[in-house]
Length: 159
Image 1 (tube, rainbow, N blue to C red):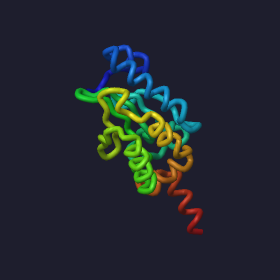
Image 2 (spheres, rainbow, N blue to C red):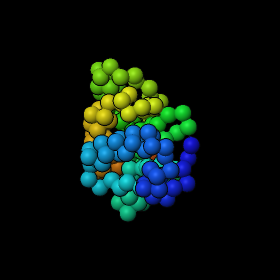
Image 3 (spheres, rainbow, N blue to C red):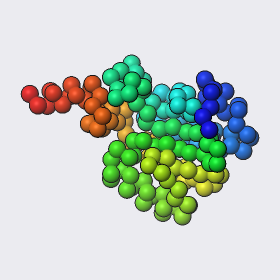
């Protein structure tokens, strides 16, 4: 369910206590591991960790590049890790590390679903969040979607 909250604090305040505690714990893990430069905001009705438009204004959809996100959905909570799905080896390493914890692996294309905090391997989530410095992430997205910065970099390489 998409929230209309405009701040992270509003978002957390509207959650039931058990979900608020779980989302707050995952948020703390994300913030502890988030590489420099990404910004926390509310976007798409969830807590988002993004490349600011001031750093990368030419995106494929006019929105900040989404690195990670955190949401309370109708039947579960989810951590969205778009960065690890840009790189096959990162995705494989994430899945291997996650499964090694013995916790239930419930993942979609870019989300990790969980119903209780105990079901989520926070250390593995933290490692995934810390995996890509912002410049590398921008370059990887640009290679797929053609951000202006990546196109300029590619043109320089082709000279």
